[in-house]
Each structure stands twice: as structure tokens, then as C-alpha cells.
Length: 314
Image (tube, rainbow, N blue to C red; front, side, top):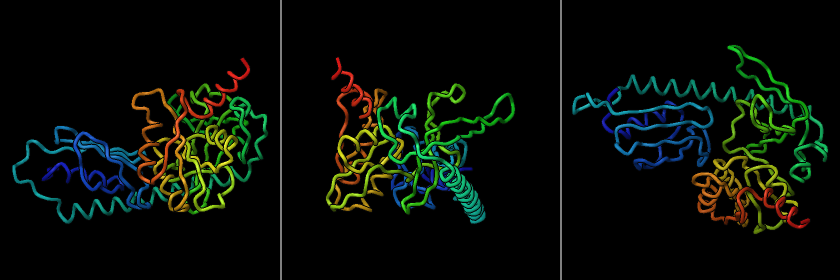
């Protein structure tokens, strides 16, 4: 396929992924874009035009789908635009994919609800809570199952005593879950997992009661341990975005629901290239008129609280 401009190629790739194009394409820079079926600012994907202007890359974070796009260097100097038939085909494919993805998300949401309703209140002595020195704050405990590829086939992992956290959409509907295991799982090589197919963009949870004053301070953080620590130390309501990439979407939702609130993004101080925790928090704060707080040491606010407790006993 030959395109008139690299922007045309990018728009077709985005359309095939169910994403909207940005207002402009700046070469050699990732642009966060929205899903066609979502609210404005949902940040469901990204697109980048390479510095040479001859190609690029797009990704839908919700579905995991990716597309590369290129200009055809061997084509004539007067390439033809997409035909009506091709545009119609792309639109049909987009609608089909959109319907399939919505059905999968709804199935995952029902599964999340079933798991959540069957779970019990988390005990205060759960290994993760004890290690992080935080309270349960409404988290639950249950059995977590995860299908994995193993030895050329599929197998189901069953993890007992998993701490369960709910993820809600802006309407207050439970859409997904996060599981936190008592320890790092040897097969998954991590101690956290999200419900497959449940999505993450624009989903969140909260700790603490809704503020009664319009201009009250509320906090937005990434992880559960960070949010629990912040609420226990300040008494403020804390919204959990679960990842740095979801901070902006959650910030916009909170700003819409609490237009006069003093929103503070409690950033993770990541000791990795680009410090994504602080970078994303700063971008989100600028977008919604909020502020940023960051611990004075590497890590998150729970890490910092534990360091202070150790220092106080030395």
C-alpha cells in the first residue's frame, strides 16, 4: 500500500487498532492517543513517526496489538489515496474488532465480579501486608488462577492466599482485579498479576472516604502499598492508578468528579532511565492542574516510610 504522506499511513494503522490520531505528528516522539470507543483522554495507545519520516509504530495498550507503518519508497510520485472499498473494509474491521474487544472485556468483568464476591476479607497478618506494614483497607483474599503456556501446551497455575484489589471504571462498576501474592511466584517471576483481558486504562481504586469539602486535598498514587501508607499517614483519600502510565487518565477522572480538589500526585521515584514514575506524575499534574510530591530517596512512599521506621530504631 502506498500513501501520500507518512501521516496517512499512521492514521490507517491507528484506525486498524481502534485508535484516534493525535492532533499532529511530531517526528521521533511518542504521542499518547485515545481509543475510538472511549472517553476523551483515555490514553489507550501510542504512536510514533520515525525521525526519517519514512515509517513508524503504533500500539493499543488495551489489546496489546501493534502495527508498523511505512511509506512505499518504490511507488510512483503520485500515489493514490485509499479507495472507498478499502476505507469501508477498514471500518468494518474496526467495528468487528471493537465488538470482540468489548465482549472480552465484559466477560473479564463478570469473572472479576465472581472472584471478588467469593473472596473473604483480607487478614491483617497477610504476608504482603506484614512486609509492607500496612492495613488491609478493604482488600480481600482468595484463590488466583492463571493460564500459562508450558511445554507446548496450556496449563493453569493456582495461587492460594492471594491478596485481591478491585479496579473500577468511572461509573463505579467493577471491571478487573489485581492479585498480590504472598511472595514472588517462581513461574511468573513476579508477585503481582492483573486479570487477563480486564484492561487497565481508566480503571482505579481508592482508599479512604470521599472528602466532604470541595477543595479538599486528595492524592493519586500508583501501587496499593504506597496508597495505603499515604492514607495512614495523612488521612487523605488516595486514588490508585496501579501504573505510571495510568496516572493521567485517573487524574482526569478525579478532576472531573472533584473539580475544586487539590490533587497531589504521589510519584514513585524510580531509579530507572527517565524516572517514569516522576515523569508521568509531572505530566499528569500539569494536565489537570495538580501538584507533585516525591519521596527524597529512590523508591515509593512505602519504601520511604519503612526506611524511616528502620532509622528510628537504630
